[in-house]
Length: 227
Image (tube, rainbow, N blue to C red):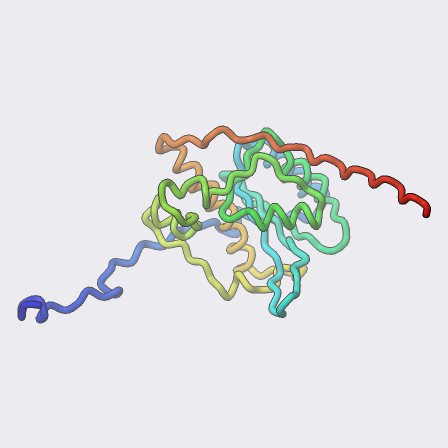
C-alpha cells in the first residue's frame, strides 16, 4: 500500500448517506373490523379491488418446541385503506368475509414472505387463499435470495422502511392493540401493494398464475380383515 493510500481514511458506514424515511399509512387510513357493518364494508371494498396487500401477524412463541396458534391478526389493504381483522379462538362473524376475499379468484393478494401466513390460515381457519403472489420471490429478479419488504422499499423507492423488532414481537393476540401495533401491521400490508403497483407501472409483468388445485379427499381405508 502506498503512503498516500494509507493516509486516506477508510470509508465507514457513517459516510454512506442515509435514505429518507418511508412515509407509511396513517391511523385515519386504518379500519379495525369489529362490527357487522365493518365486516360488510370491508368485504365490499376488498372484493371490488383488483389487487390487495396481504399479511398476517401471530403472537410470538418463546419456548422451545412451542407451536404458534396464529394467525391472530389478518391485514388486507386497498390503495386507500387497510383493514385489520383480529382473530381469536372463538369463531368470528368476519370469518365468512375473510374466506370470501382470500379465496376469491378475482382479487389478487400480494405480500412478502407469505408461506407461513398461508399455512396458518389453512390450519386455523380452513381458508385456502387463492391468487396469492409472494413478492419476495416474484420481484427478486436474478438474485438468489428472496427480496424482503425493507430491501424492496430501498430498491424501488429509495427510502428506508422502519421495521421495529420490538413491535414485531409484541402480543398480537391482545384484544386491544396499541397505535404502534396498528400502524406496523397496516403498513406491512399496504407497503406490499404500493411496491407491486410501482413495479407494474414500470412495465413489469407477473408470469401466468397457476390455478389453485382442489385438494382431493383422503381415500377411505379398507376395513380390517377379521382373523
